[in-house]
Length: 357
Image 1 (cartoon, one colour):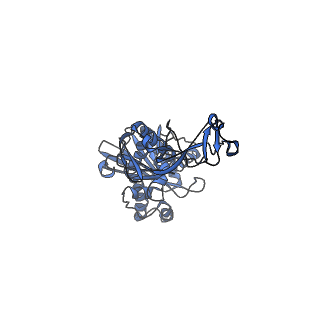
Image 2 (cartoon, rainbow, N blue to C red; image 1 turned 90 degrees about the vertical axis):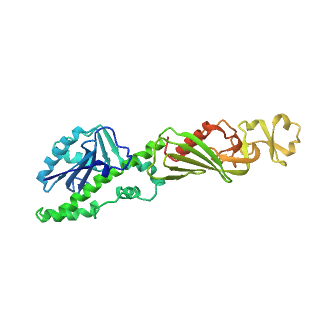
Image 3 (cartoon, rainbow, N blue to C red; image 1 turned 180 degrees about the vertical axis):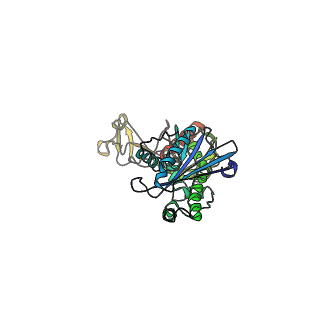
């Protein structure tokens, strides 16, 4: 077994103004020859942590033969006891279960830090709103402008590790490639810390800034105390969200035309077939029975021509629809006033986007 230790300047590798955990934290990444300990081997455990306020410590346990695996696992399990926060990328489904199964095969147990942050799961709710279609570590690093130095993926390194073992563990070039990939993964994890800003941004308390009425859209602007690392854009059924830096903009398209206000107490109304309007039963008694019929949910409405915006969030205002079965409701633009209504609209939009519950 080889143990590699490297100390480095934190500010070279940590992104500016990253949301660095306050508690003692540890980045974790492992390298294996497959997905299951039953049919593959663990050959490298790598960690990255804060040594001092200004320096980082990178440590790697490189396993050259099976008899060293237990010792590497014991050393690693002992090392992580000093940390209260573990950071990883999809470690919830791969790294951690793999390590725990390996430990169990030797009758060992792995006590993990109290807090575990999976950067993959952190960004997963925003997947369809981020640029690019892939959500693997390399793709996210590229999105954040992180440049990697390694030449191979973890999958591509498996035959190189096997060549290294068959060659008697003497090829320093192969060893450098294997260690270098894990090193890049760990430093890349540090570079992905700004991703923590996405859930923090959308769960923050927004303050209403201003509105801007244009020819075909109403723009509502909000401020978050959290800064986003990259812009995000979200198209909803009848609106759009755009976020950049500290600002979130909700775009509500205008509808100019006729909509209907549907009456809940439709049984108290009659529908006049010639005029195609509803009147209350107290007035309908003066109308000839041949041109009136009892109103239904579908026709008991008051038609109104105005400028409307789609309704997001709850509202005590009169709500209009294009037809009775339509799911989307509208309110009059003239009735939409004040910061409370703007913030309520934002909450409704975020819930539809799946960003807030």
